[in-house]
Structure formats: C-alpha cells, structure tokens
Length: 599
Image (cartoon, rainbow, N blue to C red):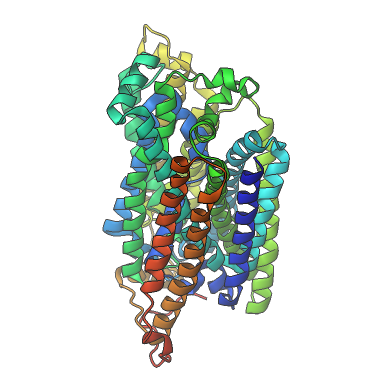
C-alpha cells in the first residue's frame, strides 16, 4: 500500500511540474485558452480523446460492463463514430472558425444576445459533468487508500487547479497527451493479464453468459429487445451530435491548421475504437468467474459493481500497479476536469468579462482574470462532486446518461443545425433552448414507466434497467423531433438581418469554407519545442515505470512494468527522434498563412 501511495504522490508532482514548465508558453488569452492555435495533431487528438474519458470509465462504465456485458461498449463505439465524422468533415471546419472560444462562433452565427445566453447555459453543464467525473475518481481512490471520499475530492481538485491555473491550455493539453499514453499503456497491460487469466476472449464470453445466465451482448433485465435496440440507436445519435457541434468544437481550436485538426480527429477515433475491448476486459473476466462484488464491498450497496476494475488490479496485478492505475485514473479525470476549467474560464473571460464588464481590458488583465476564474470554477466543481457524493443511492452510469440526454443534448441542437441552416432568425437559438428545456422536463419528471406500459399495452412490466434506457431514448427522440423540428421551423419566420449581422454571418460561413494553413518557420520551431519537451517528459515517465520492476514482486509479474513502461518510453523516444534539428535554428521569416482570427 505504501508503494501505491508513493507512485500516486510522484505522479501528482509530475503533473504540477508540467504546469510550471509550460507557463512560459502563455503570453495572452489566446495562448491561455487554446494554445494560440499552434498545437500539433497528436496533442490535439489526445485532448479530444481524453475529454470523452475519465475515471467514470473505470467506475460507472466498468460496473455496467460487469453487470451487463457488452452494452456499455456501445457508448464508446458511438464516440468513435462521432470522431470518425469529425475526421471526415467537421474537425477542419471547427478549426476554420478562427475563434478563441466556441461562444465567439455562436455570437457570429446568432448574435450578441445568444452569446450571453449560451455563455450562462453552457458552463453549468460542463461543471456538472466534471463533478460526476471527480466523484467517480473519489470512489476508487477512497476504496483503495482508505481515505475519506471528501478528502480525495478536495486533494484531486486542488492538484488540477494548480496545473491548469499555472500553465493554461498548454499545460492542460500537454498533460492530456502524456496521460493518454500512460492510460493506454496501463489498460493494455491489464487487458493482456485478463485475457491470459480468462483463457481468451471466447472463454470469457462463455463464462459470462453461463454465470450470469444472460447473453453477453444485451445483459440483464431485458424483456423487450426493441427497447435495447432503440437505446443503442439513439446513443449513436447522441454521441454524433455531442461530438459534432459548435459548442464542442473547442477540441480542435488549438490545432495549428485544418490538416492537423483532421489528423487529430482520426487519432481520437482510432483510440476510441480500440478502447472498449481494452478497458472492459477485466470487468468481463470478473463477471465470468462469478465474483460477487456486492459481497466484497457490502458498504457500497448498489454501487458495488463500480469497484470491478479496482478489485481486478488488486487481485491480479503486482505490487505498485494499483498506484499506477490510480495515477491513470487521476490522469483521466484531470484531463476532463482541466479541459472543463480552461473552457469555462475562456468563455467567461472572453464572452462576458471582456464583452460586458471590461471592453477595454488589456491582455495582461484578461490573463490574470482567467487564472482567478479558473480557480473559482475549480472550487465549484469540487462542491458539485461533494454534492453528488451525498446522493448515496445514485448510479454514476445512470447520472451520466441522463445528464447527456436531458441537459447536454438539447444544447447541441441549435449549435449543430446552425452549422448548416443559414436562414433562421437570431432568436431561433435561444428559443430552441427553451423548447428543449420543456421536452427534458416532460421526459425526465412527468412521464412514468406506468404511462409507457399503458400507452403501448405492454403485458410484461418494464424492468428498472429498461425504464432507465427508455427514458434516455425518449429524451433523445423528443429532442430530435420536437426541439430539432422547432429550430428548423423558424426558417418560416426568417427576415433579412441588419447589415452588421449579415456581415457577421457572412464571416462565419466564409471562415467555414476557407481552409487554414500554417507553415511558417516560426511555427516549425514551436513544433519542435512541443516534440522535444513532451518527448523528454514521456520518456522520463516511461523510464520511471520500468524502474518499478525492482519493487518486491516475483520476477514474472514484475515484467508487467517492463511492458507498460516500455510502451510509454517508446512513444517518448519517437517524439524526441521526430525533432528536426535544422528547423530549430530557423528564424521567423514568414507570416502565418491564414485569415485573421478573432482576438
């Protein structure tokens, strides 16, 4: 246990060091919130991937995998589909918006009133999501170290604050890449051990079905396969919409040009496609052997399944691996939290503070305000996580699904449709949010399972799982048909905009259609700086993981650290080797070949 705590402590210090190292990259708000739009594809792709990945994957999602088999993987495959659409069309368009925050794009498309509406409606949503992620991490860390969950929430939140406030988006995205490499290395290693223990994937599936007496694809508590099929379909619709709209285009605003944004999306797609098989094998293996987590963690009650991944690592991995796993979970949650912190701070400063309170503020003042705002948002996220923790009977999986379907999804409707439909009045955006709120209220609080049974004359009562899945599906269907239909219907009320507004809308659509290139010699020097700094950091982390071979374990189990550390070290060396020595000495003789961006 002492070794595990030591590993986590060293990792925390490593993250804080990243924030300190990248502090020199920030001189203005564009640098602070999106790296000045100068980042390479592998950094942007890693942060796009990590924003859809958190400790919830190892808690709520792992628990769902333990209970219901392959079902949970559908969510992540749907994410991969969303990123595929990013790659094929949306990612370069998002970068071509040429803005510092996504709400600036909303202002161009829908006007200043909607700028404020979306500023104050988008921030709470990301704060709630970050609180869910932080609570998921606290569940695992508390169970492992015997530390109070509230203490864990505070400790983790403060570390994220220090790193994000110190280094801004450069530190956030740099740490995302390093954390992505470590997480994939750790989870690949755990998956290999699970496969070896279970005798292959086919044996694990057979064991799961015989032990649970259900099909691996569908899982438990399913009387109506149609409900499962509808849920699966609408999950794809939901994840497609969430990953392909203006509000979530921030993932690609940091890319140095359109080409790098496109490659970043492909990286995120590949990683998300590989992920489900790697991440959930340990949970499937435990279920196939008949392990009863409810008996092992009686104090957890209905949340006992959330400890599946932790139990596997404790039982089947060598000493020190638990600490590395917790570090990976911290990494996953921090990447989601710090992205939320940086994004929310950017929206507040650039779309409210600078626009409404201090139009003549200097860049120095704005950067200072950004750091203060990041701190405040960090504290709010901590309090949200503490509140969620107080709701003892709440399933993290169900909370995440309902937040996505009833809160996040309706906000994406105008942000997605406005990307393609030009002739709508400006009020269409905020009015659509009101309609979406009404739909969410009706589905979430008015309709009951009994209503569904009466409407459709169902002879067999809906199970608890079926009702939860159906509620998510109904919410998404309602927003597609009613909320989306309302936005489209506003075209009937379109009238020519003012000259100033027409100019903004023209700029929005012209930017979308104009590829952005950045091939200056100054950018080449910065590219090498990114490769060199990240390569050295990751290589150091890989060497440290390999050194864990010398912890007091048997020889064969210790080889796990050699495999895991070798993967990380290899990535670091590849980056260092990619540094172009010739371009490091070049001077900036060219201007960046792109349209002027919003300040």
